Amino acid sequence: MSVTHFLFWFLSIVAIFSAIMVVVSKNPVHSVLWLIMVFFTISGHYVLLNAQFLAIVNLIVYAGAIMVLFLFVIMLMNLNSDTEPQKNKWLKIAGVIGGGALLLVLVAALKNADTKNQIAQTGSGEIGLIHNLGIVLFRDYALPFEITSVLFLSALVGAIVIGKKE
Amino acid sequence: MHVTLLAIDLALVIEKLILIAVIVTVSLLVAMYETYAERKIAAFIQDRRGPNRAGPFGILQPVADGLKLFMKEEIVPNLSNKFLFILGPGLAMLTAMMTSAVIPWSSHIELFGRTIHLQIADVNIGILYIFGVVSMGVYGVMIGGWASNNKFSLLAAIRGASQIISYELAMGISLIALLMLTQSLSLKTIVQQQQDGLYYVAYQPVGFLIFLICAFAECNRTPFDLSEAESELNFGYHQEYSSMKLGFYLFAEYVNMFISSAVMATLYFGGYDIPFVNDAAFGAHYGQNMLAILQGLSLFLKVVIFIFFFMWVRWTIPRFRYDQLMRLGWKGLIPLSLLNMLITGFIVLLRQYGWHFS
Image (tube, rainbow over all chains, first blue to last red; front, side, top):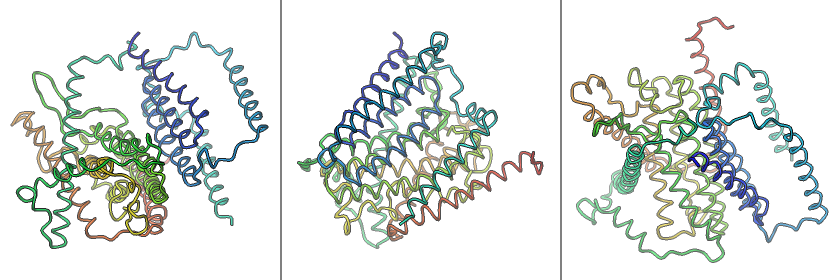
């Protein structure tokens, strides 16, 4: 078992454990902290695939910005296991069914995926480096990229409009 | 082949470990003497003498301070979240130290027939790495403030965090303008580019100014030290902390100041380049090791000047009110940095293609 193998299994186990802890934790703040842990392990996987840019952007955007806002809101509302209202039983059942349906869709979609012939290029793939990624994004996928940015902009404007309304 | 990433020979591991140990030690030592320098400079500006009891000129004052912090009683509040309460200052210190990994402290030295680069990791995403670690720095403040289970700590933590994430935006955009010129994210490459030409501060004066202001905000330094306020918040996010855990928070600020000075010197002031000297010719004449030492000292001098500037501002300028701070960040710096980015992009394209837009 090489170092890469070991790291892969280590990161995977930590990722899955943290992901389960996100769901299981009673305290919302702990859930957020476990979720940050998940992002770190996923970034670790990106590094193993030599996608350094993706790894660090994943950390900056998700762990550094979005999760801070999550934490922010939860702390400001001071949610914890005592004050959080107990969820309705039916709501729980609906959640289980919804999650299960998503799982079903994912399994169905990935069931026939060609996994045998796709070998991960550990440490040698070049596609995740910023230079190659930039070329792909701005030359081959320029239009989708721009449309995505317009989508983000409209979300931003929408958030401000909603926030301004008395 | 598939383990190239981690197939490292032992000598390299030892070399890097020694380098890490040296850089961490130097950062901590510098941070120690920054506390001393801060008091001396404050005293000088306010026409006092400053610390002068411990040792000659009070030179042992930081040691005495450290000893005092270590000797104090550790208090963990009863209703706090114990694990997170201890994790908070640890995170603050960790993120402060981690940034030093990608800064090129000098060129390279030749020792025992090996070429040793005085940089822990020359990753090709250097700047983004710094940016990522800086954005992690919020957690130290937030987790510490929340885990204290104290309203004032929580308010201060939220203040500090929202300040940091607001100024991160302007900082990032001002960096984009710089990256358009450098065409590289590696800090080593950026320094080498500046050795041949002008320093980037000459091309990016506005970008540098924005970066400087944001660095002040990121380090929670006056005039942006809103997360510490004796009068409104009792003390700040570290109100419940005592002993060395408090020391870690205070110390992390000084380490941050040192590192961000180093980053600014590297990005905008040529890093380890010795000003007005042709480094390559100097190296050929006096030997590479001598050159590397002088380059290290040159970077260090630049860093010291920046640190002095940090302190000078702290003891000169009064702090902002919170709404002024947010207005400056969102309505002042972000539009300015966007404009700076657009103009830079325009000029870069103009120089590449002339007036042919196609």
